[in-house]
Image (cartoon, rainbow, N blue to C red; front, top):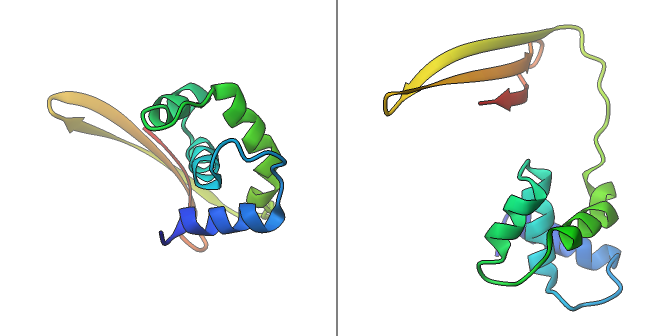
Length: 112
């Protein structure tokens, strides 16, 4: 187990923020990561429930306990570029929006 999930599991174990261990730390870490990356609570529950039963309320509570791990620092930005493009995929048209920091070309947000 390497990468982002392994780092999150280790961080959760080291911080010892969960009192009870009814679910594995790896399951909690995966739930927290999926929700943090933009999935809704119910979609996250649907994915995780395919191998372990969990409620969307449990995921919400776990995320609130672990939220400090994902602390974001506000940055002062001088200029942004927001662009939109249309893409046709299998005959269906989709619109892609992107916000980019012009100074360092950091992608700030993408919406499809």
